[in-house]
Image (cartoon, rainbow, N blue to C red; front, side):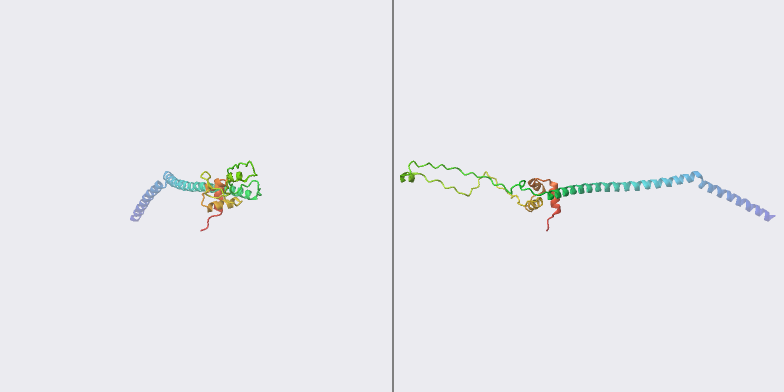
Length: 196
């Protein structure tokens, strides 16, 4: 009998233990709790993905801006290069070339020499004033500006630009003297850098 009582007692204890354990497991693994945990994990993953995608989008936008500026720069250089090639391909027409330097016309004063009345007598000729002898070398006057930099004689644009750079002129001054754009001058200067 004690054995049966002991067996019944064990059975009751195990049943209570089982019911308590089942209740606890059901409570922790309930649908509401599981959904709440899943939602929290999904929210955390979404936030992490959003941060990562925002960072990647920022990097891509920065690289796109840099790429667009590089493409614009390359387009400008290609356009300048095409213009330069077109100018090199055109034959030189000598009627369009400007003289290397224009020399100012110097006018000499005219000296009037009175005519002698009678050429037979030598006394009248001796009394006449002698004509002034003009000096063939012109003297520079204060009104004539003296050019500081001599225009180069080379015919090609490249040679003129490089010669002006050798004289110490900036790209803007070279562009003004050669009547081309500053971008063309900068392209030529970048294609032929100074060697130290």
